[in-house]
Amino acid sequence: MAHFAELDENNIVTRVLVVNNEDILDGEGQESEPVGVYFLQSIFGSETTWKQCSYHGNFRRRYPGVGFAYNSTLDAFINPQPFPSWTLNTTSKNWEPPLAEPALTSTHITEGRYWEWDESAYQADNTTGWFLRTYE
Image (cartoon, rainbow, N blue to C red; front, side):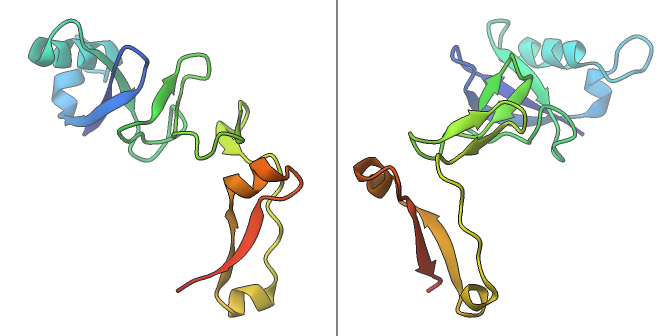
């Protein structure tokens, strides 16, 4: 099965559909993204925009969900920015916090603790942002 993401005018994913492999084969029997796009546009309209995606993230970095963005420069689907202070690493294609996440110790893990980002704390004092939390 092939997967395609529909994009709005801002390259934001509005839905992801599954298409039979037979519906995306070119004249030589090879899977073809343009054939898949043509197939979907014949159903949903020629004005719709589609990008093929990989359920296992084998290409275009990750499998998108609604609200993800397609970045044509990186040829990748990018998840929504988690916090305003986080920046996109164009090599890893992941959002990164302005401060590195502290390491968890074995005691933290045993106690069921984890680090959580607090954007408000970071905006108030850009030397802090990570806080130790406990699973409930």
